[in-house]
Length: 235
Image 1 (cartoon, rainbow, N blue to C red):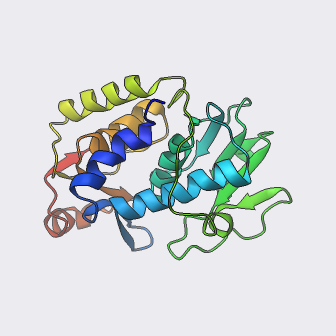
Image 2 (cartoon, helix red, strand yellow):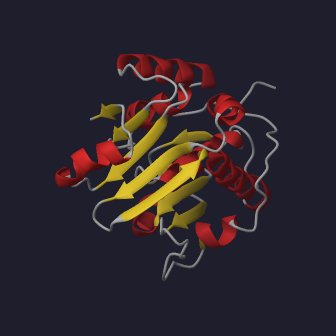
């Protein structure tokens, strides 16, 4: 069985720097800051993969719609979906079997059979007042195991196979001159496959570390660059 995209991205990091910061997330509108290591990211990805396979019944090769902003939890969801062998699409694809959406975008999922809503709350609070039939991700995912054994895979991202996505990520990393050990500051969106490859996968594929900022406040840029020991900036 070929390795999933998650294994290709995370395994080298887990071997060389499992405990170092992998994604540091800021929201300048709320003052939130959360930092997760590769181990923590892998644990949440495994929980997500177990949720999709064991609770939802997702089979390798199925489509999963991810309608979420650039966020550390989104990274975990994406890695979990790929670990489960899913093909990720970043639109409300009518052929998708599952949608993982922000709590304020539930209606965007349309008629996708299974919908998991995320609050993206720093303390894991559930989404309030969910419609009947919509599952709260934070409530459901925490009971699942933090280890996962993949059982198959399919196209990784919007019809592109794993090898093609990896090649594109490496090409963008080269274009940005990213290397292992870099601390990469970014406020780029992950709303399209190319944006996701550029803003997240290019960082992971070379073993760099991402500092992702939502609602960036330009007055904080200089201090943050110094505090987070930023070596490269995207966007």
